Image (spheres, rainbow, N blue to C red):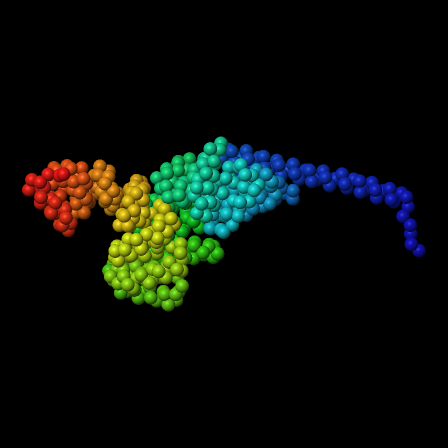
Length: 503
């Protein structure tokens, strides 16, 4: 027989359910209050400088079932401050999923910058998502400025970065973003100023220090850059970008063996980072080219041919082979290798530059060299060598106003102290009939290279344009003594020395 439920039993069950419904929200509220309490105490400890104590409390706050997105954001920021990059990335992702509005924008903006430093491909997408959540926030603006600079949109990047710098409490992140944008634009002096300001604002902010190191390397100051990057690696062992920059600096310093270690670490840390994988091959090529620097061209060629057999589609190897053939004075063999390197990797600035300089300096065809020079400069606007030789080719092609602009930017780059750029700038001014400007540039060239016959010859021509007999004879005589081959100048000098006057 089936027993029936009495009215009393039904009533009792209703009482139990009602009590349960009261207890569950009360427990949940207690958990939320506990999470908030831990978070508040953690912030107090962090403010007092007790990062370890703050970390433990924040972990407890985020461990609660109903932990808020704000708790994850606070924990992510603390991991970031402690340079625990991977933990910061994971935590900020969780924060971004839980948050909305400005807090979500901050979480995703910070995540974008960290992903960039970690060598992750999600950086640009995170920046776009951050701006979608909060278009006027500091971190979304910083992240999008950095993304636009990397995407080759420097004008938009500068506009965004300047907007970020103007925001209250912007500091190092905004200044570093501005430096990156200016670097992408090719304004090296402004970029270095911004990066140094970022480092001054926060010496421990990695994008600022790494940005400054990259600028120093590109402007021929790799030795100054190396300790800066090494300090970042010590603090932030998960920063792939630091290992990649260290490898490039060591290549510039002729330390390919040491560079290989850094490149291998970067490649192992993120197998999907195409740039890191290419860098490993670049370093292996650099090792072979060190043999070239020692005069062992045959051994360098053998090593690179062996690498080519293993990796026939490597632009870096083709570039290395082109450089070896140039050293062997076999430009006709070098040009196909350099052209293949550019075909395999159209964004390989060094391959473009080597191809252009071969066409320009060896084949004597400045006009043919211009497109490749221009692309190389666009890809690495901070590379002064590229810009100087591009300017020289513009002089050769009689594009004098454009040459003057390019060469002026080059010689004004902080740390530039070579005669070459000043010499080409002086030539451009002479050919354009700007003789006073020519004298200023050529005096710089002559001071930096006192035995350069070309500098003295163009100085003489500049003074000829100014109808300055004394200085024409002075510099003409120096050019003659140094062995100038300018027969027209020598003939003119002979006449002036014989008493002929300028007309």
